[in-house]
Every structure is written in C-alpha cells, then in structure tokens.
Image: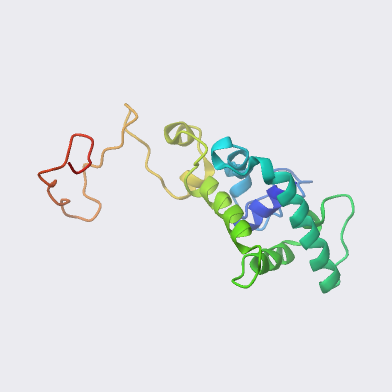
Amino acid sequence: MTLEAFADTIVPGEKRFPADRSVAGAASGGGAVVAGAIELLETPAAGVAGGLTDLARMLNEHATAYAREHGRDLDGDVPAFVALAFDDRSALVRALTGPDHPERDGWVALALFSNMAFDTAAHRHTTEAIAEGHVGLATMGFAAPDPDGLWRFPAYSYGRPLADLHPDTTASGSLA
C-alpha cells in the first residue's frame, strides 16, 4: 500500500474502487498505480525489488515524523504514508526529493520508476501494452504500430525529411 501511495503521489490517478486508500483520487483517469508502477519496481531488471520493504518502512517513518511535526492524526488502520492526505503526501515527497535531503537520490529514483511506468510502460512490451490500452501510453497519445508490429512514419513529424544517412552507417544503424 505504501509504495502504491508513493507512486500515486508522483502520477496521481482516480481511485480504483471506492474504499481505495493507496490511491488518493487526486486526478481523473489512471495514474502510476494503474500503469503498473509496483509491477515495474518488482521487476528484477529494475534492481530495486530486494529493497522495497525497507523503502516502504523508511517512507512510513518519514510520514510518522511529518504527521507529528505538522499535527496530523494518522489512521492506524493503514500505513502512515497512506494515512496522510494527498497534499501532505505531496509535501513530504517534495521534502524527500529536495536538494538538501540526505536520502534524495533514493527517493528521486523511486519517483522515476513511477514516471517510467506511466510514460513508457518500461515493464511491458510496447505493442502489447498499447493493444491492452495501457493508461499512460494512451494518455500520451503514443502511436500504435502498423499491423505487423513495426512503427513507420510516412509523414515527417517535423514537416521535412530527416538528414541523409552518413555513408559509414551500417545496416544496424551504427557508424562503422
């Protein structure tokens, strides 16, 4: 729940069901949680799966301290970060990712995973994610591939042809 609430703070979305506590419902449509932020974090390739329990514990410790400092009562039925209101979650994340916070690099990295799940569906094959209506790719208007699964752009996106290939370009696209 805690890491879902963190992801929802980075890319907010609407509640998945009425009693959803992790997703605050601060925005319409799906956010990072629906886009698969937790699935991405748990992917071995992300390299952070082994530390997620500790990150959630640390985030809840920060949330408890934040609540004490700002006079917020926390609902003990959910983790401390989840118990914070969306505006308080946002303020705490701003502090954790601020230039002076000693844990900044870790929290910024966690935030980046939330953005990657939404913006790129990094944990999914792109054609499959688009076919299944991935919320982030759909929101961003990511173009679907041609029926053969390849992307072609018959109209130049900048309104003019791209530069000719360098004469030393190999078939793979690298320079020889």
